[in-house]
Image 1 (cartoon, rainbow, N blue to C red):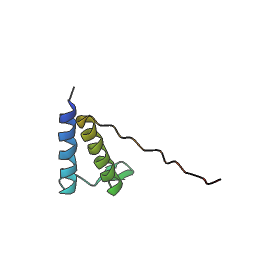
Image 2 (cartoon, rainbow, N blue to C red):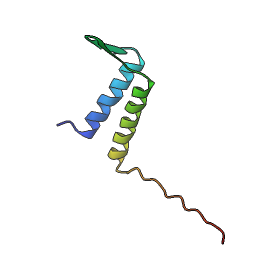
Image 3 (cartoon, rainbow, N blue to C red):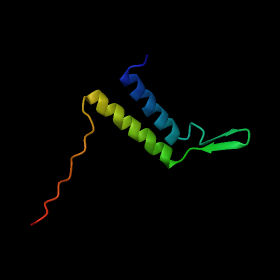
Image 4 (cartoon, rainbow, N blue to C red):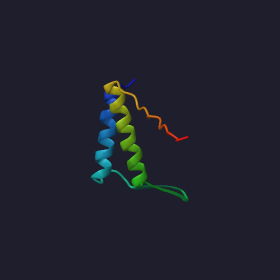
Length: 71
């Protein structure tokens, strides 16, 4: 089983390969074609950020917004 650091290294390498054009941007299976887009890159970036947070020991929290309504 790969450690979190190994997963992070692989994700960064995959992002680098994609950005430099070393990987395909589209794949065809019979009559289906899948094209990678900027959305996929955003997902890779989010995954890398999640792995970095996990390795750092921090969790993603959202602060609640409270509204003060005058009487």
